[in-house]
Length: 398
Image (cartoon, rainbow, N blue to C red; front, top):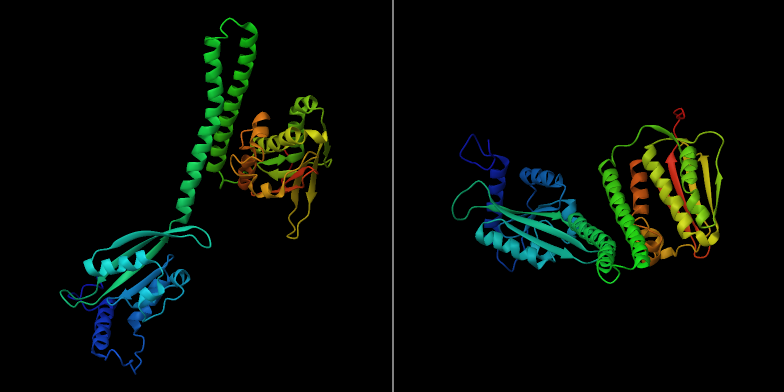
């Protein structure tokens, strides 16, 4: 049975609400405009029920009568418009001209209105409001009704759209740069350098480097996408972090020798076991150790420490820190280092073959493993990247 239909099995609470609103409107019309009302009307059970319904809504909701006075609103609406008061015109509390105009249009036309509005302080936010006039119980002229205002926060959607647009722009730029270099050298080899063997060898070497850069960028993008798709699927395979760190370090020995750097490892004699994806954790430590070798080369060494650390909750943590003794990182850059394509020095990053996605991959891998990354650095004193993962009591893998 519809509570709005008063021709069926009996009036519902919305019909009784309609009658109450009509009676209140008639009372206000009969009162002298210059004399305040001297009697108090108790809150009817229909309004109490309406309050309960509105309070259960997740978004800001306010209900107005046909004169634009507030009947009910929830805590979310009060946070959005703190001046809302029951029985007072909503236009006093609403400091959004677009919303006030939408209420007027809904009452005038009897049609629902949708608007978007934004606020810049204290931080940019975007919202959409639906203003729906609803006739209750009666038909024809003089019917009592309400206007229901619902506000939905669009800020997460807008920010996601902005992030998506920035991501596409960054990817396009990062791919276009090496592609433009390759295309330019091809034109040169087909033209002026056609018969120059020395130039051809030099140009082909540069083209190969740029092709590797594009391949690494695409590989990082695909890896990031795969990890994001599985972010809520925590790995459950026991892996030994000490063996992973030693394996990664062995694989980077050539890079360390080329840069005349020493790699020091401090690790327990027993395995440091966590539940994880070995390939992803290998990628994580490759990025951190390779970064230390590339950007901390002036310090001539990096120190890697693996340890088991107790926590107040009684669950041990596996902690691996990678410290370089290079130029360090300014404090203002530290909070943004794990953002996609964020670089402290764009030229230096590209010269080192970086894609701008290495630390973003580290962050997402740790998110999937429910781990943490902390970064400590002072200019002139190097940088320390510390990974913390929950230690597992499972047997070490063989």
